[in-house]
Length: 422
Image (cartoon, rainbow, N blue to C red; front, side, top):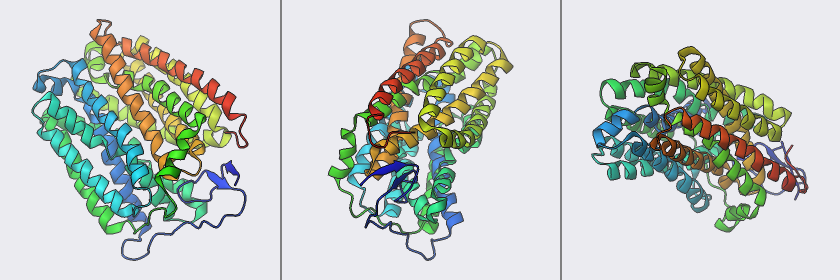
């Protein structure tokens, strides 16, 4: 069986098409009370919105959390790393173990764990308790997006599956536009615990909407742990993960410490932080639209271009962050470039995963959250060493350049394959 990237043989792989006949037939969701596509899509988007909000809101509230838990801001950055670690572990483990399970039931279970993890975050009264709560909250992240993408694609005809997955993924940039600024404002004015209680409430609402409107969707009966894990034998897949983990980590090195950067470097009041986060979210929304157009040109070149622009944007932010409007403009651009990378790295990984559809759909989120943990950790190190809050952006620029070097090695291996990435 030969595969050509850009065509589809399965609702979960909108960019991978089988060019020879196959007996496998995608299973359509069961119709009925929960088959309304618009409401079902809205439920999945709300889930992504909830996850995107909790992933990024901690970054805007680090000073308040550090004060309450009596720890330093660099140490508080470890709660960001703990959430990311939960995603890294949860995405592949759940993808392998539950690939053949009914997808609607799996979505409900994932959202239940997510809600419990965020409620535990709101209740945490010590550094270890907070670390454990964030680890639990991150566990369902990658699997929800992976399974949700498969469910979303299965609700529409083949010609619309790529667009439908794109809509489902709008939850994260929407969270950066609305969810993160609003919960950050709540956290600053009512107390940081209110932000996590808000996310837990969103998790409950998502659970209810998924239960009511998402159609029943069986798992893949042909999926086995061995087949899903077979994708891990691909060296190009590991290079894609490495490029995403190291290269994209540069963005998190800067973003993780944006709140103290705005107050200590730019010299603004903490009330300006939600505005910066709103600007970041708008950049992400625009970038997501541009990413789709760039992927039609070349996925491989789009990723390389994305890392190059990321390095430039981060270096510029380190230089311009003392000035309000120039710094905000570069911050906007970094978000735009980040979305281009997220979308095209997702497509690259799904290409590399081949038949392991569930694992491939989830691995991008593992890679990006390794980036989250690594970026926050390295950014915290240079701050702790006394280099100030402008230094993490320079570290991030270097990480983005490392991503380009990894992609050069990827290209050398990929061009030897029968279906190289375009």
